[in-house]
Length: 67
Image 1 (cartoon, rainbow, N blue to C red):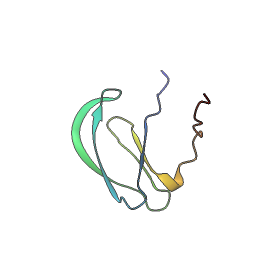
Image 2: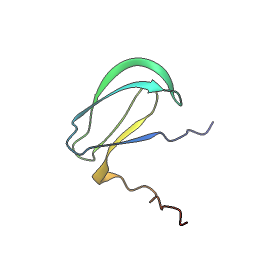
Image 3: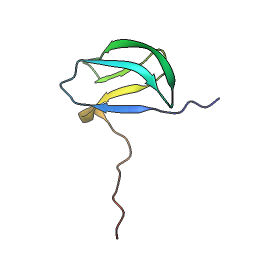
Image 4: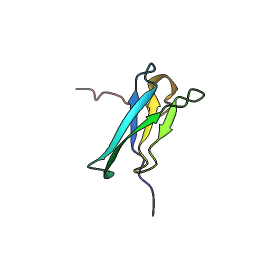
């Protein structure tokens, strides 16, 4: 089974995030997670959602459609 990536970008000053799942990953008890200072990331151990500081995100760039 392939795992679908579910990434949430967060502000660089956030040290703690809360997660209770969503419609994609399913609901679970609300938990609080500490963002790792060394890489600016944390993954929820219930649903697999990743929280990443905006400055540390190296994903695909999104381009606006031309009219």
